[in-house]
Image 1 (cartoon, one colour):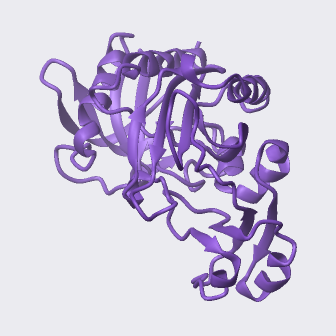
Image 2 (tube, rainbow, N blue to C red):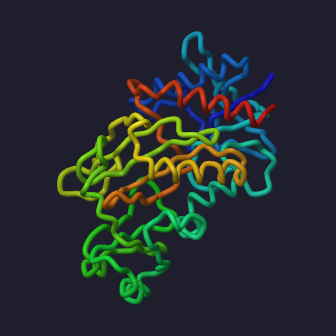
Length: 310
């Protein structure tokens, strides 16, 4: 029997390893139920108990009959893991564990400078800053009056500056390494989808778009991340402009072959009808329970997992 695990980064304790998921919990449970329909043993795991070569010293066994978990304190070997840890610490480099996504793809998404070097023709003009001592020289190269500063390996919009270039000098790098991007003015919105500033996310699994939503910043902000107060609205992919679909098609075909059929999302913004990729994310934010595209997304994840173990 295939043993499947979904892996997080928290400690191995308690009887509900999904207790911190919040309002998306029903979607995670549904994914685990779909996995059990494949006649797989389904586990929730943590990188804190990972040893090597697929062996975890502790996990939680999922039961779809009551939606509960049973702690398994002994060692167990997992065949394939869906990685929800974030970053590149898991699994260790050179380890044989079959994991979604492969390490080289996670590195591409984690390192925004590496992503720009690979897909820069679709992105805002980007410069390597590094430490703050280099900021003045870089800002002289940025063509827009406003600038975007991002930690080269940041997540969830944390540590991002968006604003006038002259104000960027007062921004605290907090000893992190940064990139700088030209500011893309998305205030014109996307026809038939959103008015004003936006960030359109397309989730891609098995080389095709499977779910789509748009995020809009709260009033007075330019950050559309939900963690920063942004609002999320599901979008019918049929309404997405052809210019974005063309880029999705080109990148998904390339990534499918190059990175072992990854599961990821692309963030877009449009300025005067021209699309730009803002980020590539290897950690797809799950839909809410009432999302129309929820089951399509989950079923494609199952197909993705199955393709890697057959």
